[in-house]
Length: 269
Image 1 (cartoon, rainbow, N blue to C red):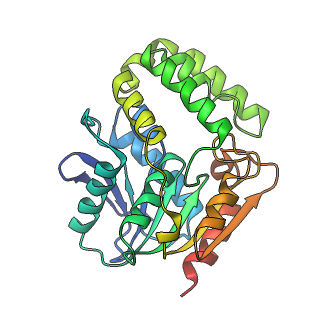
Image 2 (tube, rainbow, N blue to C red):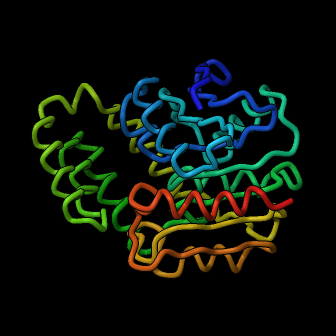
């Protein structure tokens, strides 16, 4: 899939559209979309990673994050912005996928507009962080408040299942440590995104009518410890696929397995 276009929803939320289907899968990106400064080169890297999880011919729109998030923003205003932006693309009922942090927002969008989202996919995500995930997020908030970017990113350098990938990330992080301030978003923006989801009112899972697939690693450091199961149990029509022994980075390390499950789910009428 080589055809793509870039732009901004509402003039401020970046997106990349891959393929030319009239009914593309809508994908809300993970937290890297607001932790690092936006660039379409960086976002294209994320889009290619998404493409590896999807059927080869599946078109999609990868949506990022407002880089100048209003200080009064809430999860409700963010979800409302996504809704307005998606409506600008003139899609009717559609399939929605959220990756990691993006899954928290996708869940709320599916709950807020009954019947609008026909299929919901949560990749390495759930309706809220696990207890261990909340501990990690609070630590990241502290690092971001002090603009300790090396420590913030280093916190991710031990969450791959493959120790070699953890080592490679640590090496790359050390080599790039002096360039991090110019690559990272402001600490205020990072903190704002992390805090607003932590402080948000619980989402009403029973209001989600979309057929739902939740897929992630058994040892997910942010959404494990039974949280994906709790999300599955709260949604009327939900299926859970847990990859044994895998972590939060399962979508990267097991993209072929994800493609198999996602192809099957998306092909269902």
